[in-house]
Length: 430
Image (cartoon, rainbow, N blue to C red; front, side, top):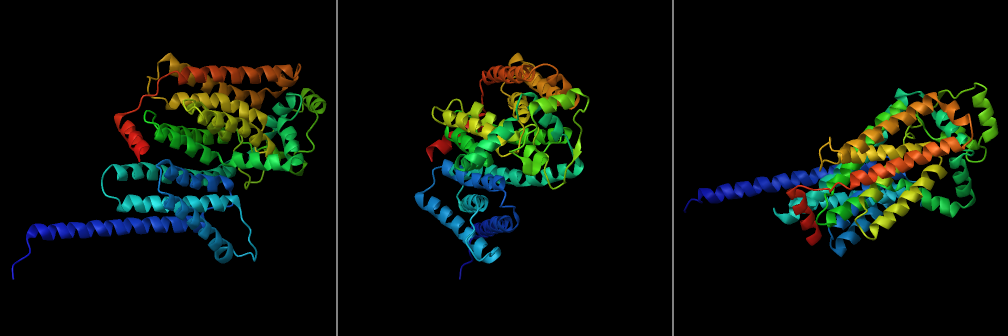
């Protein structure tokens, strides 16, 4: 009996270890999905939309029809298991958050298994390129909810009254007006509110569009989202505010303080002050990151013929969604404009920081953002001293200047490394 060649033995041992490694990775993916399914706060629509982005990423690489059907069927199965086994209520009570999130979980699991068992080559690189952003994006969305709760414990008092007073200086309360319209037209209000909470899906669509385009860097979009989210968190701590729905409580949106009464109170020396608010209420109003992300999506989808108009429409819907839900004051949206410009300039590395195309928008955006926070905190009487025209001029000047700066930074050509171009071309050809 002849001995087995050593080379064959080494090859078999290598194959065995490779199979064991793949099984271990597949097990990890299954455990991650199971833990997320059992522990994530799925009733928060924002979380469900964030995890559902994995499904959007999967669709971006043009999967087979049976994969899409399988993902949707798997998501429906998880919804039914959750309804009748994990959280039984005796009746079918479907929520949009779990539905979106469970589809995203199944999609993430399928992407993970494909990445684990695929052979080396272009196909595996594409799957990995989609899988890692999907995982990071989902973790960012879920983790941000925990950080917001931490911020609430750090700031027991909020500055909502300052933002509320500024909105009143405009002559009316925009959030109350839009909220009343939503209350009287519930179908419209529900649709726009759903769009408002679906901001992660909108960003995932923008990322997918850049991935499919051969010449654009897709990771730049995710970078904008994450960097603005992280830096925006520090502004939440600097100017903690929750939103008019939490400040006014049951009175929102029916009973705003009239302009004449608020003006009289402010000019008589009764200036706004910080007020205590329950730590369970997150302080994520100033500036509106929903508005920031919607603007970033719109500005960075300008090269897509049809998608750009959808992106503009989504930005407009976000304006009404932020106000009508009572999650934001109008001034939160105003401050989001210069903050958006600063984030775009900060993340644009295709030109040196000292170049005017990048430095001026960055410095101007940061200066305007900081100036608004200081004015709101210390100069509310200034906006009431004359007519509502004064705060409206400040608003229009901020928005107009921000748009001009954004055009300046967007004029810089977004060049990308060769590796990103290769991946984008591979994705387009799948």
